[in-house]
Image (cartoon, rainbow, N blue to C red; front, side, top):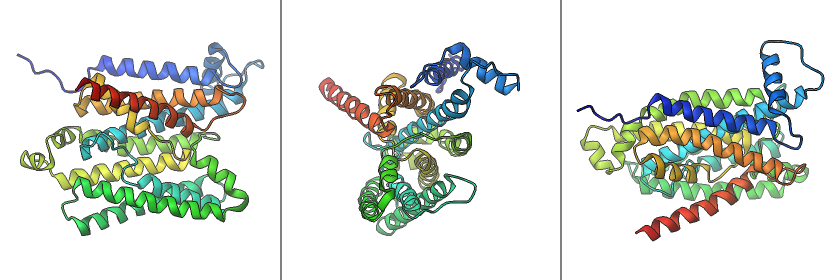
Length: 343
């Protein structure tokens, strides 16, 4: 009798990719100005192969504005959802996500400092904000893990969560203090903290893709070890899992992915909390299936949320963080209520 494979079959990944590409095309075509699908494909095809562009096709809107934005949204959504699924498995806590560590607050603090004090790199518009966000994210991780290790050398789950919550409150208080003295930059800071992919470019997409390729792969490679964490850290250790190594690799990978996403889009909540929950209902708790499904589902969800924010009150744009928080909170309450009612 053949053993059933733990992961998805290739046809499943093809279906995931097809669904994601369909939503991506929809998000490129729809907006304050609706563009026919044929014109979208023509613009992309002619740009890739350096062919003459018909005059009636809005090339700049498709290629320079919407395509890089949609790519950034899809990559960030997949990264945030993947981080949420990994953190819920690692910490064995259904309320955990990539923001539990407090690293997102650290990244946001770094970006707010860069915006408020005008820290930038000549020739690169968002390089200063991105660099400060990533720097503070890693400093936050080092600080949280150092304090946690001093209190509990085993790096227990409860201690990590507690220190993450405390650090988040501390970072938010500093951000509030900076906002008071931000002056004319306060509007940019407030809009950024609500989350937005406006102004995203291909450089941002390449950065997120590179981070997802490196750190996302690292998380996916530990899917089997995350399955072992479901039965407890002690039991995982008894079956041969290097608990401390797995924790450090996953925590560092999650922190790196979140810092890159936050540096580009600002704070976008609930993606890593709700999407893995919904995927778990369909794909089951096996991380060999859960993490890849969360990756694709997070990309689709965030693209649709961004589309909703761009089109609901067009030409005005609702910050994507507001959209995800509203949808995520309602969906999460429904999931929690349904799970409690089922018991």
